[in-house]
Image (cartoon, one colour):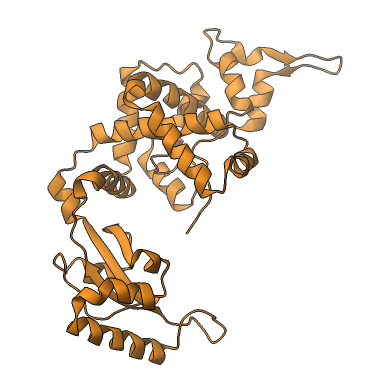
Length: 322
């Protein structure tokens, strides 16, 4: 399911330009004139009022954080890895021209997009330092899985799926075949499943706790490696689930850790705000504007405010891509 190119950071807007004026050592910098005319002057203070302290603080903090993270973790991020990731995105969206068009819609150049990807990698480095997760914890919170889904129509007009009765009959027939020969799972998933994963023989890859609906997750995490579940009913229809052997755990471990960290951030936003505060202390950040300082402390370094932003889907929430 493609969600498009996610914009990882807010663009540098007029508020970023104002930082030069607001951030100098002159206490009266808000009185600095940006534009003069016979009708009157436009001062930094006028523009700040128009934009609003919260927006200026948000952009200011993103710019500051990017500078700090690059200084601290710049040598740990491989430019080649970023280029490879971009190449995959280009292929995914049908070529360089189409991809550039998508970037333009978001006001980004290719170089700006790459820089945003780098910032995300810097943030991952920061959180990897701050959140200690053992291999055992990763294994307890993840399962490699495949499934066969027979969809149930949401209503009579739904073109996908079967009636509840037909779907149940179909999944029971598949389960009988699997009881007789479990090795047929891949073939049956490819032939019968109504999920997009059918092209991968039903493979879902690694599932992290909290990722799937409860009945599915509960059934999956009870299974031993290689074991096949009974029929499981969810809002999507009827499933048969297999717990696959985690043969590629070492290769996937870092990605799984990132997902678990993300879950922890949702539960405990103070992990992120404390990490930011430590960085600000380490780099001796000094706010030259008291209103901006208050807005950052109230809206970005405040765990509850950050959690509320995330729940409302606002930019600046609990994401590594903040």
